[in-house]
Length: 400
Image (cartoon, rainbow, N blue to C red; front, side, top):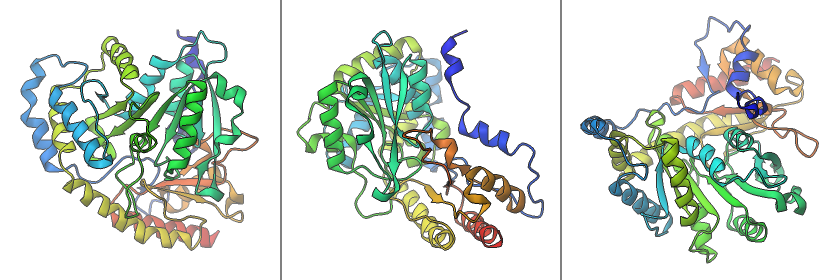
């Protein structure tokens, strides 16, 4: 058995199930889950139709690099969205969702034979970053987000000796769970660190199309181009259709950036057997080519956040995020002693609403767990259900 598997920590949702295993939710109320970030809006019919119309492709082995038409469609979307021109044959690869690719990239770029191989992650973070690093034979170091600066990550907490050992940096913008978007000056700082120390930047951008301001979130490739880095050296951007197009079960996205890294990544993926099925490729091509359904999806999220956020802000320290579909709220100290774990258990028991304890999404770093005393709420269900959940949370806090 691979001994590195013993280094993995339980996934947050496994911990949540264990936490609430003996909880009997209030049977008088229908269950509402804000715990898992799984899109619940209907999949657009034209994507389903494109998928089923391409089922004849099941008789053929797909190429790991994907069909040229799909790569061109993805590159065309990048140009429309970010004003960035990519060589679709060398600077872009389709992947089976961003989660799969975020894990696989670490296995490609990490050299565990180098002493002190390190992966730096934001904190709180998407747990795949940590698992990918550990199974690649690296150690993890975490940089906490700062609530006083719109949850910007405090990269200055990482010292030069650690940066010198770093081989891979994961960033997430818009952030999970904070929703914070990285500005250009922060990208400039990270690019300078990458140039100085030679590490690869993996930019997780799967929430980029759900935003609440008029200006769409800045992307990493867009930032690189603005700073004169047209070769996207040591940078790989990850995006997905799951949130953008409400197709989490399609497992489809793409990566783009440094051609040299993607050449090695393609080699790894060829041996790993990570080719995207032909029917999924055709459905993905259709999805990347349409923006009307994305705008409609974004409008639904905006309506939900407009109704839910003010209700919760009356009892919680929470505000509208830059982007994404999460609310990242600090609990009042007087409620459940400020314990996110106790809050999640008692809210489920009394009001049949599931939320995720914030401490499950972070690790202790610089003497603190930045998720402690916070909860993450995924507003993925319908508007009425999300509003009802918010009203129950308000009632729970007011009665505590």
